[in-house]
Image 1 (tube, one colour):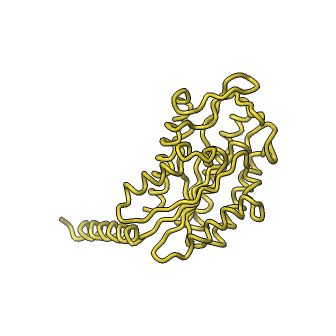
Image 2 (cartoon, rainbow, N blue to C red):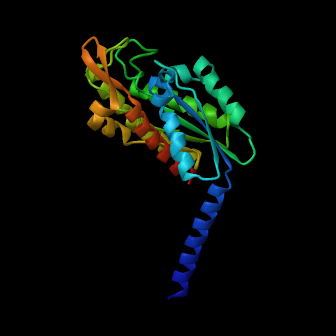
Image 3 (cartoon, rainbow, N blue to C red):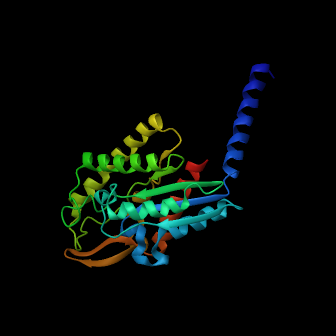
Length: 254
């Protein structure tokens, strides 16, 4: 074997070792989940994806203490989590209690956009694609400024049925707008890879298609103004979404 080849292999093995050492050096993982009713889970633990994300991470990270704060609030949009807003302040208080703990890593897991996409009935709806991106950037910039050692994982919102109309009107127009946000999330991630490498990550991208395919067994049937609609995960859907989030967080940590 040529010396150059041996040298390359040695460097690769060293890189793997250093990554593994850095990962296992974390003794405490603290996660703040930011989102709307899907994250909140109607204050029911069996409907909170964050609970299942923690179960997944604890199984994958033996010896690491994993804790969470669920800052999801029903009906909220990106505007409600802008700095200074009540929802942002709640997330900040949770993060303050986690930050600077010895041998710990603070992670923010964000999934917002469902209520932004509504035609009417939620704060700021409909939130234009460009405004959605701008709001997310303000939130992320503020978190990075206050918690510079943190990691932020941005998940794509999940599918809802095109007849969704409860207290707010979503329908097919909202569903189309929701999907337009995906490009903005991905674009922000590319920007942060340059300005804040190793701190902002794309989270789950599989949930949308998975819930669209499995809506009848993963989402709750709810009576709305245009018939039975599907928007909120049931226990099965929450467990799957939590696993998606857990995988995304684990990937960001590695």
